[in-house]
Image (cartoon, rainbow, N blue to C red; front, side, top):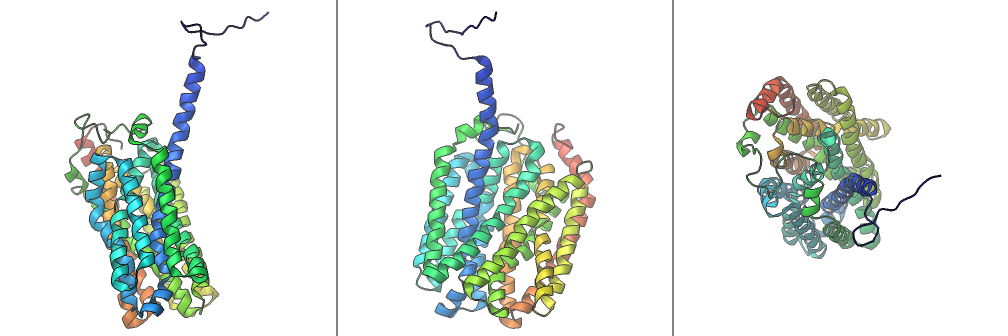
Length: 446
């Protein structure tokens, strides 16, 4: 005979069952981080949809406003330029003002600016609107990834970093593909307006479900929280720039992003001009190559984690290898006659073009103290934006005006040579970089 009892409180009502409460708490702790990741990743997609929809409407703007390739490129590069200039100061401001409020404000600003793009009547107005898009998007990448990593255990930070950074490519795919379709069916202004609506909806969802207080309760990072000034050890901000290995990671990451950014911006125009495809079809085909860039970031990150499981220094080696493969395939691919062989080589090059993003982000995380890691990612974003995302499309646009787009695209991958050199130096400086970190804080991971 079994005896069943029901726990009751002092008021005679059923009391909470400790085991059940613990189970619910554990479930919430497992689910909430993925809610944070999903919404942050969704906003990242909206970020890049608003940024890259411009590439899909390049042919429309070139025809309607009689713009040169360099002017078209400036509309793209102004966003990345503002991201590069403002990401670090705005990241520091977000740490003090509140990351969630900052992220929501950023999303509202870039979405409103995208509405202004839809109403622009000329180049100057479009340039001003794109300037504001860049201001809104400036610190989203660094603050967003800091929010995500704060609720996940350190053992999965590298994989999450690669996936989060790949979100830029996936958002670009959506922006280019859907932007081209909408532009052909309803006009290029509606392409911008649609991206703005998506951003505003996701911003409202993020503000409803995520808060700084909830993030603090689910924090997995032992580093001090943004509002816990004076609690625990805080590394000096200067440590972000005094470790040679970290500097090499910044430079290597930025220069491998250079070519990936060129592909994101100019592939729709490449197919429009050299394969005689209409803007919507050119955007759809280009989106496949953009998707390869994002898939490569994720896949190369997974490969790197496996290769570097027992020896972290091997992550430098994989990053070098990815750059080398992309350099060869893209240089040869863009020099071939237009056709299937060219597309295959460009596709392989695109797959590996951003493959070093995950490894270099992992190196930045591994070589910086947790208390300044958000600022470290802000610095990485600054380097990626100024030397890669802003410089790449603009340089190719200027070269295209003088040499033609095909020749400019053939020259773009040569920046991998400098990236490879930086990564080789970074690998050599890596052991000393770890010793610097250990001397700064004996508890730092090796």
